[in-house]
Every structure is written in C-alpha cells, then in structure tokens.
Picture 1 (cartoon, rainbow, N blue to C red):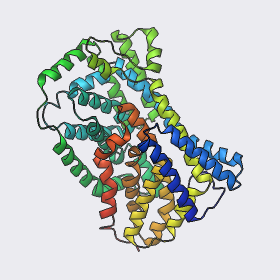
Picture 2 (cartoon, rainbow, N blue to C red; picture 1 turned 135 degrees about the vertical axis):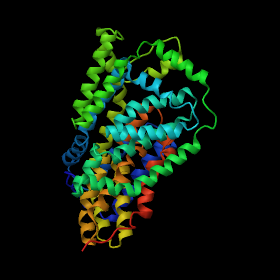
Picture 3 (cartoon, rainbow, N blue to C red; picture 1 turned 180 degrees about the horizontal axis):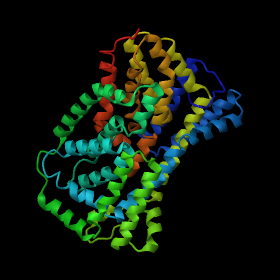
Picture 4 (tube, rainbow, N blue to C red; picture 1 turned 90 degrees about the vertical axis):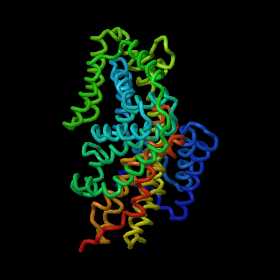
Length: 456
C-alpha cells in the first residue's frame, strides 16, 4: 500500500463529503473559471490542512504526508527535466524536423487522424512510454496538423490515444510491468489478456478517427511550402535519425529511462555541433530555454520553437502540488476510508470489476498519478479477487483499462499537465477526442466480466 499512514479515520459519509467538495472546487476553477490548475490544487491543500488541524492531526504529520506524496513523483520529475532537454536537442539535431518532413509523405491522403493514431500507437509500443512518444512523434504530428489546418483537439486526441495504447500494450512499458508485478501475473499473459478489451477499443477508435478525418486531400502546394521551409533550416540530415535510433536501442535493451533520455539528448547535441547547427557556447542556453527558430517563414518558426528545461517548469510545479495534495488525502484518512468501504460489499463478478475500475479512475482524479492508481487499487483488490475466486489477470487487466489510460484525461494529473504543456492543447479540449482512453474503461465495465470463470 501507499507508505503514508492515515492519522484519522473518518466515516465513509464524511470522506465522501470532502471528496465531493474538493473535486467540485477543482472542477469549478479549471472548467468554470478557466484558471491554471495550480490555484485550485493549492486551495485544496489549504482546505485539507485546515480539515486535518480541526481533526487534531499535528501539522508535522500533515507536512510529512505532503512531502511523502511529492517524493513519490520525484522519478517522473527528473525525467521531465530530461524530456525538456530532449525536445530542444532533437530540434537542433534535426530529429524532430526530419520526423515532420517524413510525416508529410504519409498525410497526403484523407485519413489524417487515423494515420496519426495508428503511427503513434506503433511508436508507443516500440518505445513503451506514452510521455516520450508524445514529446517526440506527438510534437511532430501536432505541428503537421497545424500546417494542414486540422483540428488541434482531434489531432491531440489521436496522439494521446495512440501513445497510451502503446503504454498499455508494450512489454517495455513501466505501467504494464507494474500492473503485472503488483498482481503477480506473467507479463505476456497480462498483455494477452488485455487484448480482449484493448483490441476492440483500438478498432473502434481507428474507425472514429478515420471518419472524422478531412474528406479532401491536403493541397500539395501547402505541404511543399513547409517542406521547403524545413529544408531551408539546414537542420535535416541523415544523422538526424541517430538520436531516435539510440532511444529505440536503449528501450529494447531495457536501459533505464533517465539514462536513455540523457544519452539520446547528448548524442543529438553532439550531432548538432558536428553539423554546425549551433555554436558550442549556445548549447546550454538551448538546453534551458529551448530552441528558437529564425527562418523567413513564420509558421515554421512557430513549429520548431520548443523545448528546454524552462518549458517543463510549469508541469513540474503542478506535479509537486498535485502529489503533495494526494499525500494529504491519505494522511487525513479520506482516501483510505473510501477504499476500505468498497471491499466489504463486493461479491458479484460484475460489481467487483466495476468497483475496481471506479477506484482506479477515482484515484487518478483525486491524486493525479497513474502509478498510484495501479498500486493502490491493485493492493486493495487482490484479496477481493482471491476471495471471489477470480483470476489475478482479470485484476491486472482492469487496472490498465481504467488506471493507465485515464491519467491523461485529468487536467491536474501528471500525464495531463505534461501533455497539455508539450502539445499546447488543454486537456479539456482534447478529452472528448481521446477515444481509446475513453473507450477502454467503458469496454472493461460492460464486457470485462464476460468469460471470467471463478477459480476453485
């Protein structure tokens, strides 16, 4: 279970009351007032601290809970620093420009959103990381969508759907390995069992994206104008493919993400220096502030001006606040009280599946962290599934169907904040079009109990 021990044991009605108040507060500020998520999360923290003090929880315990919550996300935070550097270094090495230029050869037809979804899914399975996929090929596709005047909301929805299909189905994915490990199921048995709900969600999503794609072909002259401008940057070279190859190589051999991203960024920077794309003295400025394009074609400047550690600070600050908020929800006993209430009332297969999915979704909404949605729900329901005689793989599949893919749909979550920042499309804008992420929990709730036989 989560390492933070509750200092208070509220009743279920009290815990649910605060759950509704806090979620209502956050939703009102983000959706109703259109504020940045930092403000309502900070107000939620203040509200929870006040609640804890009223319940005579020492401030030292509340502070420890906040720190422990934030500490749980430090691994992701360090990766965010490196992803900011990765994007800027891939810009100056020509890796992202060459991906955009190559992508134009695939989008000349009328299936743009479907192609974005399919290619992003393939890259996602190859890399095993939704965030890396979004920050690399996703950035390239969002740029292409802008070039052809496609809907940014649908394009982002297709990118997110494909990236999280890959995150869910790749044997290299940390969430996939985490779900199988928590429930003690063989990794490939877990992936095979997930296909029962994942493949239908993929097919339906692909059909929807194809249906929504523009009917008319993209004017070749518009594409040609951008291709000419990209070539004029002098960033594109055959060596530009090397940083992507390094990243794929590291992923295949299961080299830790921190090392993989750092190595790819360093190789990309060296390539940029060799090709003369950047003066050595400017490298460190680009690593921090990102790359700024300066061509004669303003749309390409907007397309390529990205990256840097500075671009990640908004995301990092919100992740720290959100995870500290999650820590307070545990130390005050609100989340433990709600989770414990579920366990004693579950007997039927369908109710168990629905409750598991609801808990995974609820943890994502309350805490905004997909790893915790898998860990907490998995630990909470292992005994329930065993008592009901259900196969552990049914639990691991539901954890992914309603845990992994929901995180990018929560505006204050780790993935949601990161994706909105990198793609430049707010979560609430792309949410209705993230079809795969929306369909996965629906399919597991409607059909997840079918074919499951109790083990005796």
